[in-house]
Length: 443
Ligand SMILES: *[C@@H]1O[C@H](CO)[C@@H](O)[C@H](O)[C@H]1NC(C)=O
Ligand SMILES: *[C@@H]1O[C@H](CO)[C@@H](O)[C@H](O)[C@H]1NC(C)=O
Ligand SMILES: *[C@@H]1O[C@H](CO)[C@@H](O)[C@H](O)[C@H]1NC(C)=O
Ligand SMILES: *[C@@H]1O[C@H](CO)[C@@H](O)[C@H](O)[C@H]1NC(C)=O
Image 1: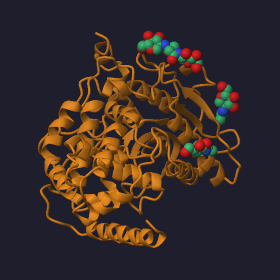
Image 2: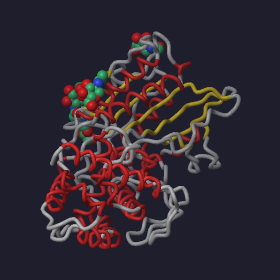
Image 3: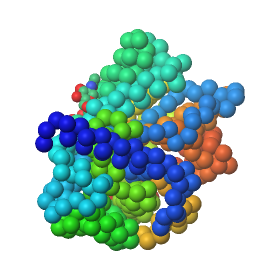
């Protein structure tokens, strides 16, 4: 194909994507009931790029933030090698189709799949560095020459890269005055509170996500196969193609310019995909798994140690050698930043008691009232921030997840703040090493 037609194709694809974006912003009728604020670009489950779920609310009048604990997911990445298998086979099937009978599918004739696996993409590195800069600006009063953030990361390459990009962003925002090092890398082969890999009896969420796949995907698969006769996509490949919209957009580098792959799908399709991620997290390391939240107990106990300034007491995932040494687990800093993975963070949030649902999530009918939304909990570069406050001599705790203040109904009146004392008392699940669940990981 010559240069001129190629430019034409580019314009057609760009117009289609633009049309999709415009349409995406107008509410439509669909088979799923949407939140009125539904935005397909924020509905890619765990592959959604970070966005502030609410505007950050400063602490109440008369209160000062005196300590901050950040638990943050790595930034946007390529698909994992496991997830790539269905993506690659879906793309290959579409490329081998007999014809493309719908304009949204035409881009496939020129589409070349070039994504890597597992690693952070440049946009993901930028997200991490932006987060470091925001942290410096938001909490500037906490730092001085003797008191800079204490940073740890799980040893996965994308996690380490996110941590170091975060420290770069932090240092740049301070005009080079504060340069926090990455002090501890926790091996994913060993005791690691920032990864969920130490509970051999923990199950998977495949049964639940497969049930939902059978509900939401068949109509989409039928439509895609009619747009690309001969492709014979399966429902799992359809699901993988929706994920490719998110991954390719992240790889292209700017979430406001979506991949042409996104043009294959309607808001309703994205809502179905998004709910699959809710089920995946809920039934893998969340409340829906009997050995889910126990995998967050080690981190919760480290958090309690920092909040109370007392040594870690834990018999689960912690590395006792590291946590007993003030050079690798200091207790006198004002800001701690830990870099981790989505499943581990879901376990930590659940161990603490956040996002508890009145009923287990249904695998056939999403409850529009649910507060469990993976895209708002662990998007790429998502973060849970535990603030310790001093208000008139009494210490309090607030928790923000992607800037949304959590109600903390388990230790207070549900208005987003608890006394430190009540918060510590509410953490009996962590303090008891998971109430017998940790032992059940091995028995
Ligand atoms: C924290 O304690 C260590 C010794 O364990 C000390 O070297 C360091 O200066 C202390 N930092 C602050 C901010 O007090
Ligand atoms: C930021 O992340 C990228 C990977 O996307 C990595 O190559 C680079 O070394 C990181 N930068 C810093 C300063 O750590
Ligand atoms: C604990 O941390 C030390 C220091 O990094 C390391 O040598 C050791 O292998 C770790 N042990 C486990 C079980 O992770
Ligand atoms: C690692 O965790 C296991 C299981 O809790 C524990 O038996 C072991 O002592 C831990 N090792 C270290 C170095 O903390």
